[in-house]
Length: 500
Image (cartoon, rainbow, N blue to C red; front, side):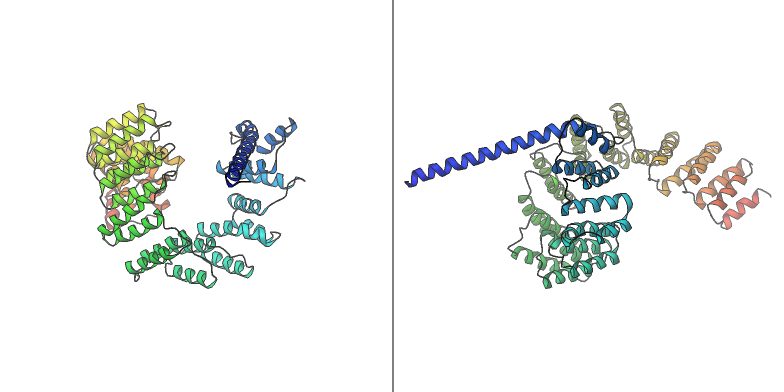
């Protein structure tokens, strides 16, 4: 066969292979879709038990493969339905045609941590049948220790993994470096790197980034040490220096006040950004904002729009926060209106950024107008909205509005962990004292007492108000005892004046 014919035959064979692969993928996707779309719609409600839905699906004559069952489990985890996901995994584990693979053990361990905690997870890990299963699940357990900042347990697990010969990748070492960074044990990070080198475990991008971050935080190393690590990274043929590493280096220069070097590195980082993911754009936008480089902020914001997919609310919050930090409220308002015209659900956190900027700059009319506008648009104020409004009204000495906003904020405290800053709580009490509003002052301090936010200055205000109104302070003294608030000389003098 002549070369030309051979090439044609080869090309035809490749086309048939690609076409066949596409047809196969299309068939698999079609079958998966015919299963997932109707079945997962049955699980949308958190109250729906997946086992009952699955049994009904099978009873209707449908077949479900192990691959599909695992996918259902992952979907339940994505929906944070950890209890249901664990129930499902236990059920499919007991099916005759289902064989647990190492990744299943890792998923089950993750679900045990979410449902029952670390003690049960540790027991499950120790009882895993073989080293392959332990190797797959060890990172899940280690990450749980890192999340709990359990240094001793994490270090003990690493020793155990060494003994079992399971530490064969950079990932466990990276988790340990993360742990030492969050617990401020920066000097342990280079020791981890040394351990990796002794064991001939290659560093990956994250290893180098964590190493550089440790040198940023620990006094005594300095920029030269970070630059040395970065050069090692550049010379590592197995690692590609991406935007994240350049952003880390730029952050070092920013903290050291070397703005020109930081800007040059950020421009190099821009060239490394993905056209498929926006994450890097907003990291760099934040760094440009730290440098007060508005041009870089806006340039990257516009560039991020070329990435496919919807721009998230978190992205809008990031760009608005950066523009507010740069004191460019005009641009912030323009981008806010852009978000508002495209948003599918009104997220009050986005408007809160602009609302806070208006209040901090004393633009009360604009703030009140924006607040009314968000209500009309269907926005639901949260605790942060009320905190911003209270602070603005207090600063502008708008008594009635400050009290109304604080009332609403206190009502929200029953359903969330937020608590207002003490200075704001005290400022509202001072307004009430100035206005002589004893009835609401009593109710207000009682609410503050119920939430455990009282202080001696607050009780002093209420005692003074009761003294002025010539009303007994017995309930105040009782609350002070309950809150274990000790009186100072000034407070004793106020209390004595009631009997004087």
